[in-house]
Each structure stands twice: as structure tokens, then as C-alpha cells.
Image (cartoon, rainbow, N blue to C red; front, side, top):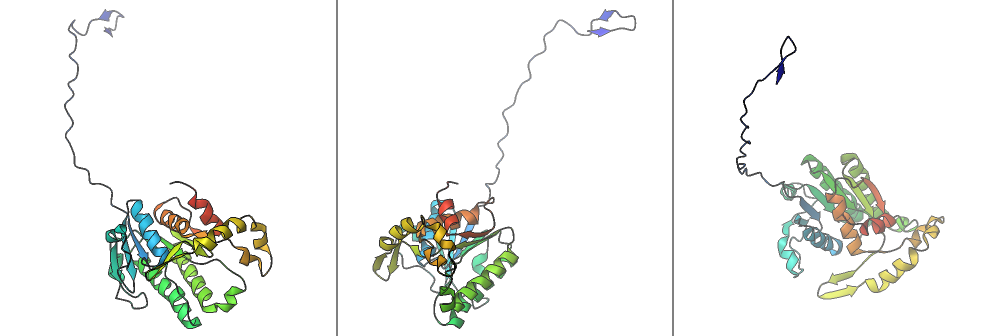
Amino acid sequence: MAVSNSGRYLSTDSNKVDEPFKVEEAETVNVPLPPTEKLLVLGGNGFVGSHICKEALDHGLSVASLSRSGRSSIQDSWASNVSWHQGNLLSPGSWEDALDGVTAVISCVGGFGSNSYMYKINGTANINAIRAASDKGVKRFVYISAADFGLANYLLQGYYEGKKAAEAELLIKFPYGGVILRPGFIYGTRRVGSLKLPLGVIGSPLEMVLQRTRPLNQLPLIGPLFTPPVNVTSVAKVAVRAATDPVFPPGIVDVYGIQRYSQKKY
């Protein structure tokens, strides 16, 4: 109906009822799946690194490992799903191809020895990895560092100075995607050749006791010695989450933060 200039209603349609719209079946379009997150674990054949590799595989990630010895001696079935690379972080040009297609890196590289050796392994090697990952456009980098044990720092000067240098470089190169985990003593079943050392026999009770004495951690000089141990599975869980969860806050996570994050689902 419409209104004429004189105000009379005029008919503008017939008595026919419009046919309903015909809906055609939509054409199927092949939309590519989102790219798979690829994680590179530096030192993936070690105690902590192997647990991180397994944790990442359990979350459906594509996992690669880089170490000086290459493939792990672990015979568990999950190990065959890891891409093992051999290379030395202190030898540029011998390992950078392992970063191809990688979206996140977790470094477990570290060691003990003379002060100069400890600085190279804990500091220089990790700094080389951080810079190479940044140049390759890696989105997130997680570094397994160590808790500050106060007086022990002087006994292992090269170890802690190397760790601090690597931490500083990470915060510069990855201000929005760099995470530093600072566990204390990490316990769990550790393989040494064909032997399995049940470190949890000591670590688990200590963790239960020391996590209830957190105020003692603030005591001058001796306070850091009350830092509770943490289970290797907790470290692995938080490391993988920090490497893949875009809302995981960058920065430093102490042992209490590791315990807290390991209890959260994501």
C-alpha cells in the first residue's frame, strides 16, 4: 500500500503471495589449518629438557631438540616423535638451521666446571641462542635459569654470572615474549647411563616442608637456602605453557610462581 498526494491509499501489489527464497547449498571451501606451533628445546636430551620435550608432545606440539650429542639415548616411545639436531651453541653456523620454522624456544642449557667454562655454557651459549632466535623472528623464548642462593653465588661465580648475563640479554631481545624460570633444586627420576636416580625421595619431602617456611626465605644471607625444591614435571609444564600461551606474562618467575602456574590448567 502507498499514500497518494490526496491522502488516498493506493494498492501497489497483487494478491499473489511471494515465493520463499531458495537457499542454495553453500560451496565447500578448503580453508588451510592454522600453522602448527613448533618448539625447539635446547638441551632436550638432558634431565629437564627430556621432560619438556615429552610435555610439549603431550600438548600436540611439533618438537625439536638441539644438543651437542644429538639424539637422546632415551628409549621411550615419545622420543621417536622428536626431531633431534646436533650442534654447538658456541660454534656459530653449526646449528642455526634448527631454528627454521620454530615459533618458540626453551633453553635448558647449563653446566658446571671452572668459572670460565661455566660462564661460557650458562652465559655465552645462551646469549648466542637468544640473539639467533630473535634474528629468526621467533615469537617466544623461555630460559631455565636458577634461583639465587645467596652465599652459594660466590662459590659458583661463573655459573651465576653467566645466568645473569643470559637473563639480561633475554629481557632486551624478547621484552614481550621472554620468560625466565628460576627454580631451585629440581627433583624427579634422573637417568645416569642405565641407572635411574629417584631424586624425589629427597626432593618431595623437602618441597612440602620448605614451602610452608616461605617467610624464612627473606632472612639475610641464609634466607635463600630455604628455597623449596620443585618437581621436574612442574618445571616442564610451566616452561611449555610460557612458550606457547600468548597471554603468559613475560619476565621472571620464581620457584613459588612455578608451583602456582603448574597447578593451573590452560
